[in-house]
Image (cartoon, rainbow, N blue to C red; front, side, top):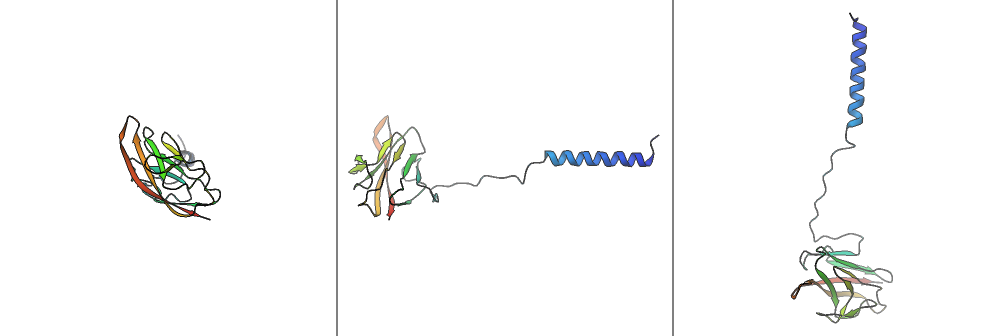
Length: 151
């Protein structure tokens, strides 16, 4: 028969091992829930604008760019739609002709890139963002956007 001291020692060892096992298996920190994101919102310190699912839904409503090195990226949330970013005046290097405005930044499929800001560009510049179904270009979804160019 076991003595009282050996029972007490066995109980203490079992409690210690149980506590150690619980400590090793517990999750690190409190459970985390992801913060909801509801566009449009200001994407702080970013020059990447998400457009979609419609042209009026954008993540940065007034994008500020600083000369000489800032560039902007626009991406459609729907990779199956074409995205065009068009301006009435030439703001960036290497702009091509537009369909709804005079100039278009460099666009390929669902992504557009601004390139370098021209020395002559400054202040607020309105642009048109256009989402187009590549299988039916007769119903483009258009909405105006704004960039602000600072020295």
